[in-house]
Amino acid sequence: MLLSYRIDVNGLRNTSDRAVGRQNGCARLLGLMTTYRLYYDNAYQQNFEARIRSCDPTGPVSTESGARAAWEVLLDQSAFYPTSGGQPFDWGMIGEARILDVREEDDEIVHIVDREVTVGATTGCIDWLRRFDHMQQHTGQHLLSAMFQERYGLPTISFHLGGEINTIDLRGQEPAQDVLSGAQHAANAVIFQDRPVTVRYGTAAELAELGVRKEVDRQGILRAIEIEGADLQPCGGTHVKSTGQIGMILVRRCTKIRQDWRVEFVCGRRAERAASGDYQLLRTVADRLSCAPDEIPGAIDKSAAERDASFKGLRAAMQQLGEARAKLLVQSCAPNEKGIRIIVESMGEENPELLLPLATEIAKNEKCIALLVHEGTGQLVFAQNASAGSDLNAALKQLLGELPGKGGGTKDFVRARLADPSKSGAALEVARQIVSH
Image 1: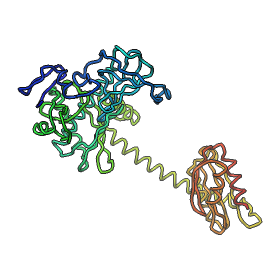
Image 2: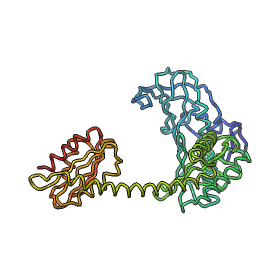
Image 3: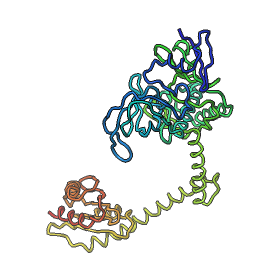
Image 4: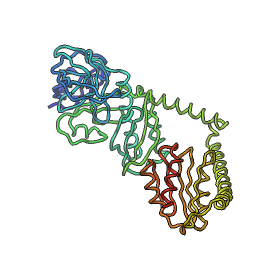
């Protein structure tokens, strides 16, 4: 029985008296897979030789440029990582064919490519920038998850490696800012120590004895990633040789996701880009606020207070203007044969904030209906005195049946916005005809 083997990316180190003498032999014995996975032995291998076992047409694959014809290719061995365990698939080439997707089906790695290839000898090439980025993010996730669990009792429930941002979902109490910062600091301390990252093979029981972070209920020999003195975790993904190659971890934010807490983070080159982008954004904001970066919070508070004061002043001015203008409009509008005054008003240059107070003031008058629209925004406000006896909500529904838009309200008051503001004049005429009958 194979007991326990510790394998780094460059070779095999025996931790049992019955060791398999070669790294590939160990991986073949452990994997028992039809497609031999080269990345298990060496995640840094960018080019490889293989034999194409089959190439069969499959359904079209969606790409950024649209649906493309595709073929399924099986190799005797492959360095391409398939989407699995939260880590996306590798990009690259098989001969002249471009990889569109890589999937894991039973013991096979299925390569989806953009053209037919011939059965026989071929070469493969990995998109190294994408592969190494994924290695940085994935190893960084192992380390960050270990710090959250070890120091704060927050286990990782799931992991997603995204194109820009990575996430882990933590279970337990909400992690406060000092917890997020503490886990980040502890993880980066391990990174700066440049500790070895190695691979162990063993049964679930053997890994449990070694202190695996998350026990799994699986039979046979398992593959686990060990960060020296920090973490041991079952994983089939690709990882860096040492923590120093992670570069740095930046925790971005934490949000509530159902019963768990989703933590966003970035590692390596992504962390460098994020930190640089953050600083440039701070400089831009500081320049706009005419202050130093460390003075931004106070400047924002001041600007917010000034904005609130200006808004209150604007509302007061709009209220006064609405009252005065309502009197003029009511006085200049003659009642119809039913004694109803229907005041139709289209605003062009005025502030749309005037719509509400003006309509409200008009509706305070007996048997008055206000039909108002703002031409620039397509906003509609209809209001009436209850004595006018119309159903403005029903009128609005009929109007929106003819001219697309969204809105609603009550029998005496409705608000809406037209999908096409240029139809504002037509909307007022339709509304006038509806309430006039």
